Every structure is written in structure tokens, then in C-alpha cells.
Length: 262
Image 1 (cartoon, rainbow, N blue to C red):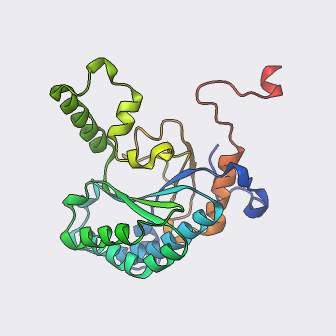
Image 2: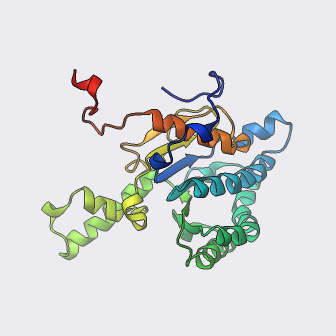
């Protein structure tokens, strides 16, 4: 069911990919930076540094393939529990990342968006994030969407509070609340028709969603790969997409093909 690098290798992904069936929205849980660093007897922050370079590679690959939205789980609401020196390093990463990558994002017509409780981040981090959003605002290609200080449960609570306020204010009737209302209250609402990922990829072999996009992943395909995020390559990314393309997405219905009808 799930893609594993240790399985027999697939044919070159570029030959397998159906360019008419590229997921519009791919979400990635970038797991394993610290474990990768530990395996190499390096400090955990070295894994995050290397992971930042991989973000650049995978972003350009996704854009080249025609992905409309790439959402990356960069920092969760639970990650504040990590050691202070690691959190401090992670808070400085957006500035370092965007300083070097924004020119390439502009060149590739990629627009930056950020979802999460950004107002709770250090001021320098907020400035770096806002600068990247502003500098790429006129780009019309793929959206590079970072989940930064984001948590799925907190997002739903905030959404419920916003809806409850509308009801209390008399601007929303209780019986009018439906899935569309909830979609509009979530942090992915600005993504419009691409709010829900078709494909979720998680690196490092773990098979859980870790409080990520709990509402939006309802019908997503999951592909788990063994590589730690710093080991992720364009080839592995494309192979994960090829696994997605081999799946039959039925959304609770039945497959409409000859074998299923017989």
C-alpha cells in the first residue's frame, strides 16, 4: 500500500509520471532532520540546515511538474517543546532561507504563503516571513505554502470560534453551517479550490499525520517514504507521485472501470 525505498526500485519516475495526473496540492511532513544528523554524528541543527536546502530542490521540482500548491510542515505548535537552542535555530531559518531563495522563487514564478499562528513567532521571524510574502506577491505560478507554528487541532478550534462569533453576531444562521462554512474558517481558505491536498508525503518512515491538516486530509492519499528529509531527492519525490498515480481515488464510492462492474 505504501511506497518504501527498500522495495524493488521503480523505473525512472520521469518515464512513469502521467503529466495529466499531477496532484494539484501536495503536502509534506518533512520528518527526520534530527535523526539524519545523529546518524552522521552531527548536531541536530545540521539536519535542519541540510533540510533547508532540500526544500529548495523539492520546491523547484514540484513547480516544474505543474503542482499548484506545495504545503510544507515547517514548525508545529508542539515544536516549542524542543530544546531552546534548537527552537532558536529554527526561528532563524526563515530569514536565512528566504534571503538566499527569494530571487529563485521570483525567477520560477513561485508565490510564498504562510499559515499558522505567525503572530506568536519572534519579531525577526515575522519580518522575514512577511518580506518573502510581499516580494513574491505578484508571482502567478505555484504557491509554496509553509505551515509555521501550525497545529491542526488549534486551527479547528480557531475556526469554530470564528463561526460561533458570526452566529452570536447574527451574521450567520446556525442551520446554515455546513462543510463550506468550515472550509472558509480554516487557514487553508486562501488556497480556494486547492485547499485540500490530493497527496500527503511523510519522510523518515513514520506513519502518522502529527496534527497536520486534520480536516483537509480527509480524502488525501498518503505515501510514506523511508528517507529522512535531508535525504529526499527529486527522484524520490517523483516516485511518490507515481505511487499516487497508481491509486484509484473513489471518495467513498466505487471505481468506474470494467473490472469493478463485472
